[in-house]
Image (cartoon, rainbow, N blue to C red; front, side, top):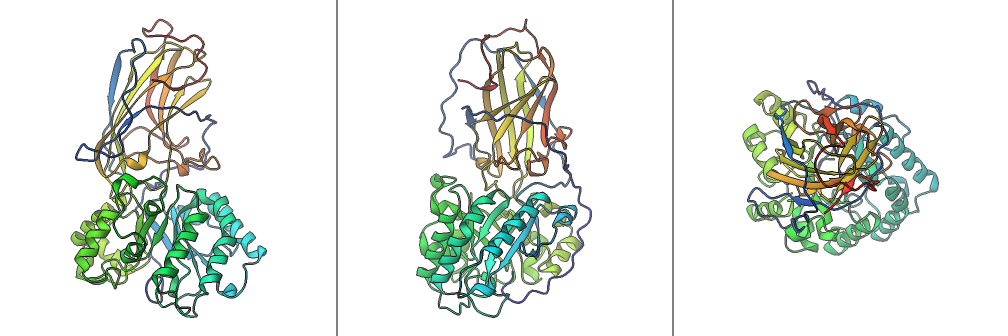
Length: 493
């Protein structure tokens, strides 16, 4: 993965607290609706908050507020953290079950296309790739995907053949998007790092065609990564405007991978001259697109204080600890490795949850959440925010009209909603949960793919949800407007 031949070191990662379970959650049924998301930047102004306050319909029940202490423990979360950079081949038939047990949720998925530089990819190879994604899913992982024609030497394919290959790969990629965290540029040059092309692809026109083909092969809400800031600036001159973030527009779907982090003043050519100008450009561009990678060598720049500053500035979501092993060891020796582990990507803290003191069947359940993101970055893939009302007989699920990718580092981020309770809900003490499952139905019920919030005492590892209270009174005599015909647990105005 680095700019030169990798001699991957065997790094033993210890001391991680792994949370999660292979037990599937019981069967919630998704609903859709609209609420008010008052997520804000730390400056308390946000380009995302356009929803108007919900209309008041009748009196709502009195609310109570639960407060939660921040959890400082290390635990796994999807699409962030340390990445197993040893390079799982996807087409080799191997099992990936042991990777999550080593405290990774991400793995570098390297797919070699050496044998097909001048020919179509055969169906047998595409089938093997599809089977590899099946094994990734079975292991509770996601991959950072890259297609390469060499491992440093041996050349690449022509522009026409690369575009043909992307078209052939598209159906398999679309079928398995749920376990692809992000797709790296690849294809061009040595290691697929967009330099040293043997087919003259080191030019803006070829790079643009290949990135556009990759974006076309993905759903509109999924992203790719590009090797250097100036490669992206060749296509879109200016950094991505905040108004385009998470819009599905092409510019807002291109992130970055830096495979020589702090290896030199220019990160070994990641930044061309003037370096400071390109760093400023990248800082503006990475607000809502994925950033990750690795380093090339240990030096004074990779010391803890500077590394933490740079990781935060450029909103890193994942890092390969296998390369360079000296840098990973340096972070351990200097005492910042645990902090970096916890802050890579998003790390959400729920400070407060307010909800009805009691609610009648068919009544209105007001709820308000106050969260912070204490990680380096926001989420970069879509994810629903759900409230679960479990009356002991049925798990009622409401989907909020909230995009957690907008929860940028800092806060507070506030979410408020009014939820209609079904008239058939069972009276008694109900359990109220906050649930952030994967957006894909294929893995939504698997707790390994749900986001865990860093607040003490609320995580249910079997369901992958957070218990706000296990004693919400469902009381027919409770005050509040009632709809005796209400069937669904859903947001209302």
